[in-house]
Amino acid sequence: MVLLTGGQVSMAISSAIVFVFTSALFFSGYVLQQRSVKGIQDAIKPRLPPPPPPSTLPTPLASSMSSSRLFRGAPGSKGHAAYQHYISHQQPGVTVDWNRLAYVQLVKSHDEVCNAIMLFGELHRLKSPARRVLLFPQSWALEKQAKKGEYADPYLDTSRRLLRMAARRYRVELRPAEPFVKGSGLELPASYSLASVFRLVDYERALVLATPGLLLDATPLDALLAFSPLSSFAALQTSPEAGDAWSDLLLLSPSTELYSSLSEVQTKHPSSDLELLHGAFRESPKIGPPQSGHHLVSSISMLHEAEAGFNASAFLTSSAYIRFSDPKLPGPEYDVPYFDRVRARPRNKDADWVWTKLYGNFAQKRMDICGLDLEPWREGMEDGLR
Image (cartoon, rainbow, N blue to C red; front, side, top):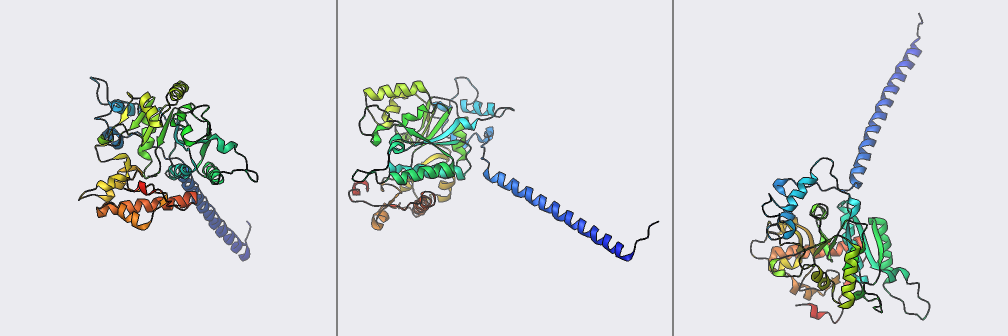
């Protein structure tokens, strides 16, 4: 039998205490580390929109079912085509390849660059899992630094800086776009067309939103991009009064054949983007006007029509994307003189609060994302005020 002295017993007890507390500290640190890692993973991983259950078949999309061929089932079928498509995606083993889906923006001039990047910045913040593609004139990538005495594009450096920032910060894929009509001379903005999106054949589907605008909720747009029935082309019709003015949202499936066909038509009969696409897809599905109080795209012009009882909170929470198509101002990127802005405000006080808030938010995001102030109001633009 080995007898321990008092010092040895004291040392053994001290060592045991140190071991216990060290082990406890290690395990607590390990648990905190795992929680931190999980928190970081949750923060950076994409937000995947699940197919909505039948009881809530998706509100922003279901709003158009009564008037849209895109969501109309075949005669005698049960439910709508979109409903059946959603059900099929709820089956085990069916997944969405988000690498084949993309939000696409085409910028034709320098003043459109920040508006497009602001949209991509919000998609990144809201964790949209779809890819982001920005098409820009190829001359911006080819043009070299002007020598002394030569004409230099004064805005080119700013646009290049913003493009590089978008690729680095928001994982935007930059793709130079060729002039849509060959031999058109100077590469003016009109030389480029939204039909160029059809050349992106490495994507199954592309969604184009009109800018400038503010993205409030990416989930319904992601659901539209991922789960709506596949078609060559579909467009958003904002209201029954809009007629054929469905430029707010375009949903299309890229195709080399379609691009070649559109290029041929444009060469023979030059026209605007919307005239070209509408003529080619006149019988294609249209996403009809919302009827359930939810909107994929809302226009800020709706605030000028607000009547008594207008619900400001409902307007904001029910809109996924708000486009600044304001008939009384040239655009949210311009710093309009105070008295002109006052004359342009909605008459309804609650609508005026939302209107002012949205313009303020746009100006702040423009600074936060692009580092740009509002553009000064220039003479000659007074005709834009009505």
